Length: 114
Image (tube, rainbow, N blue to C red; front, side, top):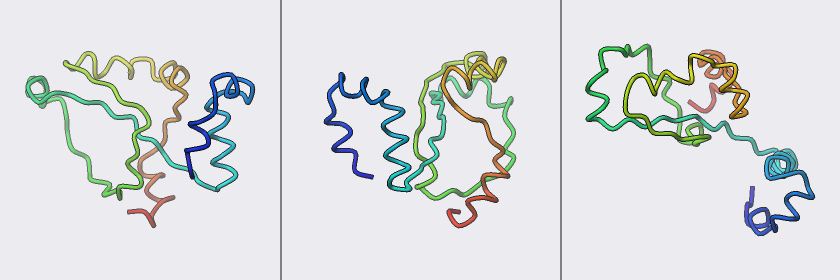
């Protein structure tokens, strides 16, 4: 999908057309171009070393780069910050307009991308 035309729209025109989310959704539907944006969290190694014992690897989905687009990005410096959004996941997904999904279901649906 060519973003040049979308990015050249004035702010007033974006508002008239319903906002950037509406414009992007319409363009994606017209071009049959949809991407999943992953929510990513960055943790500096010097902070991560303090709580690596709280993680357990459960697998490696082996997604190709096309499936690793960034949807949102944040930086944390401790375990409490990392888990803060998970305490009220319903509110977090509503505020940031995100949809949780099962990794297993995702892999089954996009098997051709792995």
